[in-house]
Length: 412
Ligand code: ACO
Image 1: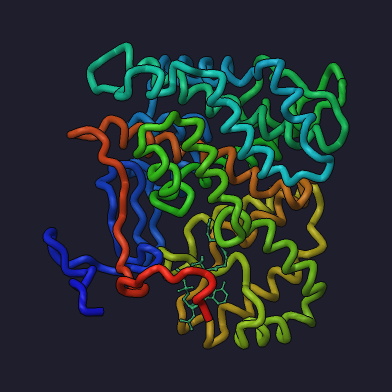
Image 2: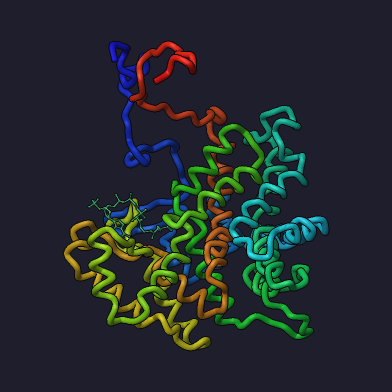
């Protein structure tokens, strides 16, 4: 009061946009979303085409480097990623130090930060601050190594978080399997010499990985960039992104959907649940999106993938309830008026459940592929024209004006 209005600054009007509703913070060439039309493209390629013809690792190359790889480029990329999936033996002790019931997302988040302590070459403070320069082969090779490591080790760390809670030994990544096949091997392998993942489930998980790989400036990707804008190493930035993804409004939603369906129990309880959502006593998890104002295009791919998985695993007992809930919400005035439709998480949990993953592991199955998107954006930011500018938003101050200190004896 009586002081200069905080939102009129020497740099012009300061806009207060709660939750960044309409704030662009970067120019990007990576992912395009049209939320009204339900369109998602990676580097210009429609997500439906990639899900049908590409693989997670090929799309990872596309997202990070900007074009689909040639055979040689792909072979090199795949070899490097897989080679870097092997973990340092000390990491075993790190995982064994968690409580038996630790949430796997807490373990994964900590593990990404732990990884940073292994690679001083990625730490700008130790390397004279600015590390990465376009056209400088050596710095680009250093950057690539961090990318291979983080993508490769994401599956190994996730599998370690899974196995440690079961009191099982850790498994060295196998040679000769695909990225997703290697992940399933590290998760499931019980010592059988002839273990191979079921090809239908491997393909299904690969498609889910691919469609989760990037989604432009969602909360976790923004967190990665915000963190990286101080030039911290990418392991710390990815750990920050992983922490953001953990929340039930973001990557935790696939777990929340299943908990919601279990609590509803059966289709006849759907109408009373919908009424509770409308009274704002409950949230319909897996519905609604900041950007999509129609069905999330990924939800159709997930629904189709679910049918293929169920042919192998049998139908999930919650499917009927999920379908009843979906159909009821899609016709209800409350949801129609607010343009609330299924997002990628609505059907995903049912697939993960049918495949035998524990519920609290679902967000990990989101985090592992999303490492790709985080790194694509990190690389773009590090190499952007004019260098990196630290992200330092401003606030509109609405607190008290100047006050004089009152000694404790005089306070009432
Ligand atoms: N259930 C019930 N009502 C909802 C839901 C929902 N899932 N989502 C939004 N609404 C309502 C809001 O209450 C609000 O109503 P009002 O205008 O009467 O106040 C209106 O729809 C607009 O919603 P906002 O909260 O303003 O939407 P916002 O863009 O801030 O939030 C979010 C998007 C967080 C995804 C929200 O829709 C939500 O909480 N969904 C459930 C959680 C979920 O599925 N998250 C996964 C997102 S996708 C992803 O991370 C991969």
